[in-house]
Structure formats: structure tokens, C-alpha cells
Picture 1 (cartoon, rainbow, N blue to C red):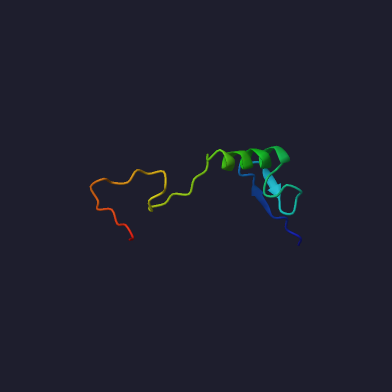
Picture 2 (picture 1 turned 120 degrees about the vertical axis):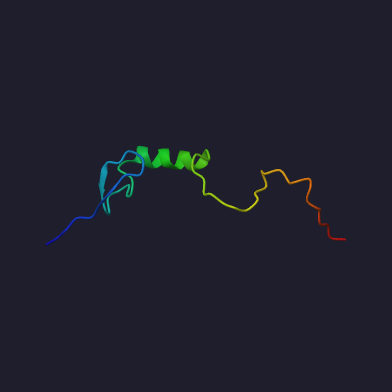
Length: 66
């Protein structure tokens, strides 16, 4: 009873066997597309914290260290 483990490629949803050359992707093309998605900020991890890109609320007092 040698059961093969498969998952769906995160890009094209093709079944991929565990341990294959580009696992968890089905091909180098899907692997490269996923990398490009990360590089272009197509993926984002949601956060409740203030990021550097969000403007500061001008009504809040600003704290400075002297």
C-alpha cells in the first residue's frame, strides 16, 4: 500500500505529486509566475498595524524624544 501524496499547484491547480522537481508547483513556469506575484506585491499579508505607507493621523499628538 504505497499511497502517492498529491497537492494542487497554487497557480494553475494541476495535481502535483509530492517530491516532484518543482513541488509544490507543476512546472518552472508556475514557479516563476508565483515569484513574480510576490515581487510585484500581488500577494499581501493583512495587518492591523500601521505601515510606513499609511499617512499619520494629524489629530494625534506626536511624541518626540529629546
